[in-house]
Length: 543
Ligand SMILES: [Zn+2]
Image (cartoon, rainbow, N blue to C red; front, side, top):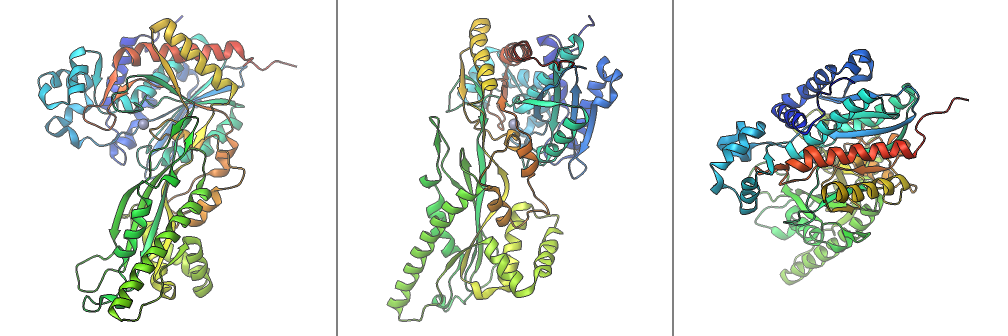
């Protein structure tokens, strides 16, 4: 048998360090170049020299690409999709040692001489020699490296199964990579006659609470959605404050009620989502003046487990109605005490109703023109564009003001869970048992990966079509943002995440547990896949 390039823990460690040295922060040149480098690396394998067509780059956007590498056994149908993202978050928090963020061996040595700059638990880990520090080591280039090792081994040993490695950009921002990959996965399925059995991600283990050192596998991934509001008040002059109502005033009532709102928290299978929190609340007025601010916007973060977009919009509407009631009451009381006439009450409306109103008033072309004009602003992100579209429509429909216009701002990660699936149960059992037997590793199961992942875009299940509420209330839908819900619903196979243990993702103390990452997890994932093809008949029988 041929010698494997990545067959030992040392070789995986070298490969990881090389892959980390290829900077790939989201929305940088490095992110654009990264998949070409992975492709070049995989082209060194004899398998891809013989089967160059199984290795390909596919378009995402902004000159970014995702990469697929297929290992196909001639007689196998069953296919495991190995998912990873190759973008990383920024590195400014490394300060004067930023250049070392991409050199794990050097950084880990360097930090030894700057021990006092690190928090206590990072100091201990550094002293123990058990961790490798660096940007992307944990989140999640190790996952990709492990998958590369599996592909190499499967091809060399001709495992009776298919493996499809998929590595994508943009997970840390909008998951544009994975959203683009969904339709390609359906296409590859047809072209290569694949049957998808499992979507296996390799995101790292995130602690469930501070200081948590347990190892987990995840049989699902938490969802995230951003209910947002445009507040449109009525302008007035500072000399006559009660003849109008400011947008920040209206906003304050909703933000008070959205932050930590327990009606937007879910508990499923003993796991509970973090409470909602405000991500942004701002004035849309661009400069200081004595005209009162009458346009503002707020963005709230909500996590999901079993709920969909429609259910979130309904709850959001209830919370907003309560906020508007309280706002109107408070305003009227002051008007009464000051003996002035009140302006109209603040109403609550969905973005879709505002859009319908505008279409009715000006025709559908007008609304499309507004969207196109906003979309031309490359300097605005999807959040800003969402607010600007709603804002422009409100400026033209002031008969609706004052109002809270409820909408969704991207991104949306639907929740996904496969805990009840027989194959997933079998995989989880295998890792638990073998983890303990082979490595003395205590393995726990978590039903929803709490770090947000690209698994949100496969195995979509939504019988009530709750996604239509998302589509209808997302102003940028179909232009700068969309989610292929139909294609996602066709990718029906269970999800699972098994990745390496690390700590402090997105911090300057990001680090990977060496033994766990290079020995334990690769062996467990390999064994889990072997167990799968031993148990299932993955080979199509000839008639
Ligand atoms: Zn990640």
